Image (cartoon, rainbow, N blue to C red; front, side, top):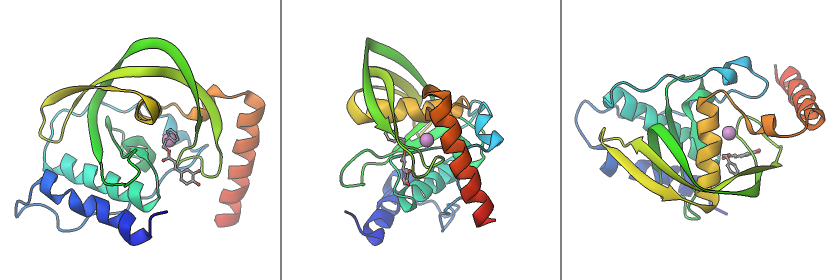
Length: 195
Ligand code: QAP
Ligand code: CO
């Protein structure tokens, strides 16, 4: 397992990718994550119209929030920002941050695979979800340029899960209503105790 310090180190290393202009904000921020069944998680995010410094700062904050929570993926929707941007890092070493802006996927192979999915917005619960195993994604990078890549394995699962967030969908929407209701009740109780 990684120490908290190692987990924190990853987003700092992004500095090179993000640029070091003097106008760049000096600090990143850990944002608070909405939890199921918060209705704001059902918002459909709007496309990003311009990749500017404010958006690069948001990408940085999403990465810091994801690493701090030990997640592998985080969509802006989960921090109550309804724009089409998501981050992920599915590497063992937690040092391969990826940013997807206005991502669009096409399925390369209709074959489905099952994976036990979790979610930072549904803490403590994991259920198997079936999704296409191989996809191609087209997105904008932090430089505003379009890029494409093919994904499989955990990266393909995670990207589809995160794009679902941008469309107001959660992995619990794919499981039985009974299981979903059980999760809803347990999280509502946890939220009451926390408040
Ligand atoms: C989505 O989820 C995902 O319950 C990203 O207590 C997950 O990073 C895609 C997490 C699995 C594919 C497979 C969940 C951390 C992190 C928890 C996450 C928890 C602490 C979830
Ligand atoms: Co999620």
